[in-house]
Amino acid sequence: MTYEKLVTALQYRLVADGDRQAVIEDAYAGDLLSDVMGNANQDSVLITIQAHKNTVAVASLVQIHLIVLCNDRKAPEDMRTAATEQNIAICETTDNQFVAAYKIARLLGKV
Image (cartoon, rainbow, N blue to C red; front, side):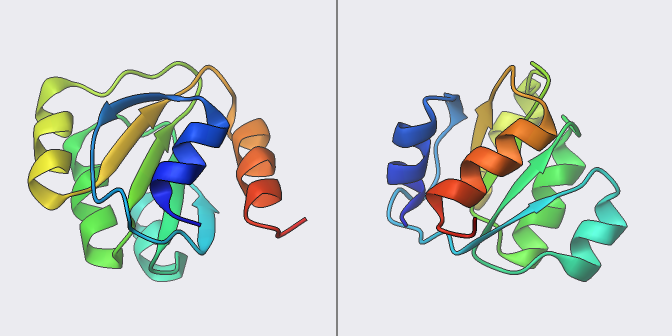
């Protein structure tokens, strides 16, 4: 599924745009960025509460196309700028990580 279709289906707030045709094949929920680096698959969406630009750096290393910030966390300006430069999208939601992960897994046909 393209990230554009995923974002449209979720109706989350898009605060940084990325490659709308990037294909999302998996998801990873985590807040420990070293764990994300070691275990997340490329072409994933990262579900997290880590609202800072280091999250974008990790997403770029792993080739993650979309970051979903949960619990109504707001992406600061430097995070949005870094994401735009790396062509990574960021969404914000009031959903917690469990709910966001379930919704995304369902859309990706994982559950």
